[in-house]
Image (cartoon, rainbow over all chains, first blue to last red):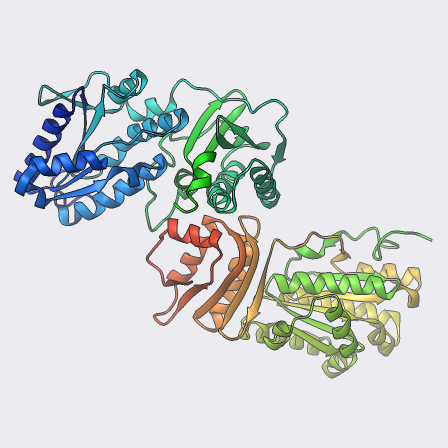
Length: 323
Length: 294
């Protein structure tokens, strides 16, 4: 992303924590009106019922605004940043400033998926920094748990308070947020393990993965999706990690977990995999692919080494053959 | 009587080379004690050579019979013969015409010519399986045979041709076998694993049929085979209908190959499986003529 010709290449990432629907309408409508008035490419991503209310409130101004259903874009947290990057590439083409309402859609996400979504919120600061964009993320205090609201305050550098943006003192630098306090989790006692040390072992590791995932109940289409990303994580462990490497595949709280451990000290950059890779060089695509093909990605480094856990929510894997 | 493999007695100095992992220029020695052993060695050599995308020449006393045997083992396909990837030759005729026994320079020239024609026909390498017994008898003495093998080692290494010299242990005294083995770079071991992928030449449309799985362990072989096809014609079709896995780094290698093609060049990815189609949908490298045909 070259941003040299753009008026401002440091995006603003702001949250509004609201209690009542009227507060949502007021904040989002005022934000969109400001974008229209400034000639910015304005997009509202929200759940369908909110979209209708905002459209009605904007009246004739709504014609200048793009509305998109948040449910489609937010279903798999790892795909959110790729979708938003594509949206911003189009919106800011030619250097035009952009404005985006990004209402998350956390209903129906498991705790692991929600945690992963919030990590994506932290990483999104690095994405927005490269675009001339102002982003507003509404969080519903009447519906969301305190832990999510707390994470919201730690991942947004600005908050909208009393109708005015203010710097947020609770904001945590994204890389620090992503490193987090959580250490590696051990696989369940007795889970079959596949140990590997060299690139010649990768095919056998994939065979083990396919067999275990099928035993655990994953269907063919979901398995193809899983192996596309997990195959890259296995390769990374051998190439960038330290041997010996280990692979476990097991079910945990309704998710199929692909758990890859290497003996190394982890990823140099905790943002690795969150942001879309540069299209031409294609470097750093492995972990990014895992984000696209899993419902949650968890990284942790500790005394035992570095863990990558890829989660596929089993209930959804059965209902949605293609995503 | 020993129950070791066919290449196990009398030559412990030689290392064993896995037939599925041969480097270009390797000059192998294999001793068999019956037809079954010979058949296994030839079969493995042919299967691995074809899978690597190389041209494989089977030079034997009876080409028609060798073809029948390999066909019965499911190793000869009509396509491989039609594309010129698999060739059967009469070994005595081949070597006699080179006049190699008396003229080492002629052997060198013939091998270089073989390597040149192999590249011109779009194959990354040439492998020859030769049944040596008739030829050895024709040379007349053990010394002449050893001289010939020594010369062959040098020229084959230079030309990058991989060969396997097959000898019938029933016709060869143990001491002779040891001396002959010593003139080769390695002894064939035929317990190699099945290749992870195979790259079979296709003449029309010009390209390769890629099957199995391609990852970091065999990416070099994949790139080598595609490059050999591109060297002859810049528009290459890769039939991916039996490719079960392709990693992102190997896909990127294809884009890198395509990026340096002339204006009329392209790599066409035909009939990708669901797994490969998903990877293609997720990774848009761009900037190179790579076309996808569902």
